[in-house]
Length: 98
Image 1 (cartoon, rainbow, N blue to C red):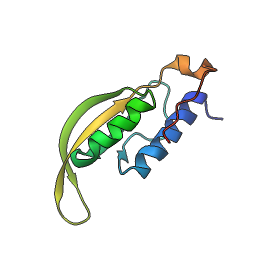
Image 2 (cartoon, rainbow, N blue to C red):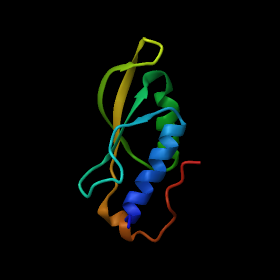
Image 3 (cartoon, rainbow, N blue to C red):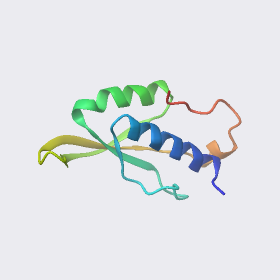
């Protein structure tokens, strides 16, 4: 059975993927693991804005190329969203990405 923290991470991972990001953290989220994703720099601001509006704090981790299916490399960055254990007991409004 998934914890509330793991459910929130999976929901966010689906939303990030739908927006074009590449989730790199295996799911379900481990106890001491944060959700990492890579996003093309051309799409980063839109995704980061969505995260801010949904009250998620995305921490910049690194930059590097993303190797695309069209045999091109595109500049991309890796970000991380932390989910605290306290969120498991949070009965407030869940984070929404839509």
